[in-house]
Image: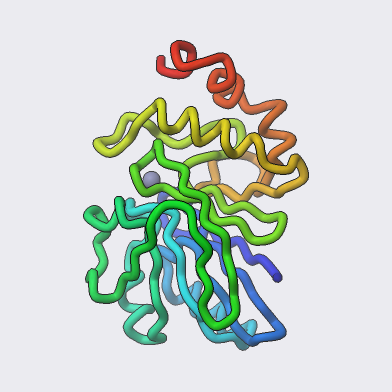
Length: 206
Ligand SMILES: [Zn+2]
């Protein structure tokens, strides 16, 4: 699967396009802000959209998506706990619950439920690629001071991710670093928030 990382909008959001050239299909992760740019990339690859996945329900990960969904007609998946905050017509959205496998038109993605930033925050695993949304950033983690946040859930989610294979590549939901991607091994070693998560609950919540 070929991965395209697009930076969109005013908040450094990353949208990802996972391209399955054999099937002539793609999956969109957090398509947001700039639908013209996203559609242009899809057309350039000459693929159809099998489905989209939102890593969580915050507006900056699906802003202006409705227009593209209505035009190209594809399902949009989100974890059920975040549906209430989504600014998208709920008839266009399909929910899943916690950990699961999404499988549409033969493209399978593994969902890891990683609450903390929001109750329905998820990471998407495709082979050795992990799309971490606002759970894990490079050398940082997502905010845990929002209405649906839980610092302790975030701590446990980070520990869960650090148990994955060290060579898995991490693609974050925002460009908050001078690198475009990282690995589980690098974050395990260098991420200061991960270090606090490992030290325990009292250290993590500051
Ligand atoms: Zn967010």
